[in-house]
Image 1: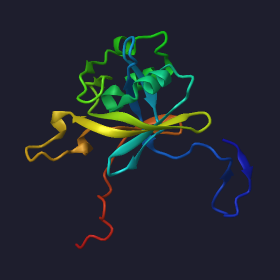
Image 2 (image 1 turned 180 degrees about the vertical axis):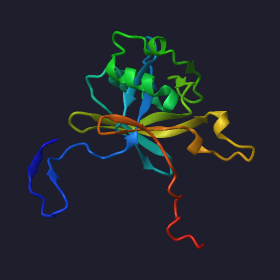
Image 3 (image 1 turned 90 degrees about the horizontal axis):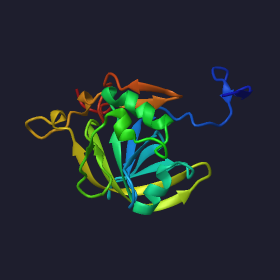
Image 4 (image 1 turned 60 degrees about the vertical axis):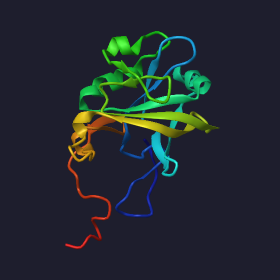
Length: 196
């Protein structure tokens, strides 16, 4: 990033517009066309866009190998990366499915999805199955807005009362070109107004 000019605020340095929103999730998206093997693409441009119905978005460059697979099939799985899958996550972001079988090269295990044809990644703690509702061309990337059709969660994250303990998932975030494991919890939603 380059400094563009002096900031109107003495405590700030002004930079040119860039993709600085951080942290963002580091995920491996699995997809599969009607022909051929499934593929994995690493993405960070991912986010929740709606609660009812539950929906999320992913943004993919049209020149990527996975783009036509998602466009053709209209579905994909978002697999959340954790500390154990961080290296595989990075590898799937720097090699292309055109030339590599990413499941084979990373040693990741393809598991069965409940609602889509694309597989889940067994080693990832949370797998979010999605069906595309809309595609929007934005510029460098096309955004797929998708409905969440099923979620699979590693059993060890669920206690005897069927409560999810996501704090034990060792999830990985992406910030300014680097991967980080999520750290200490600071509070929960509404803690600022909770009565003591």
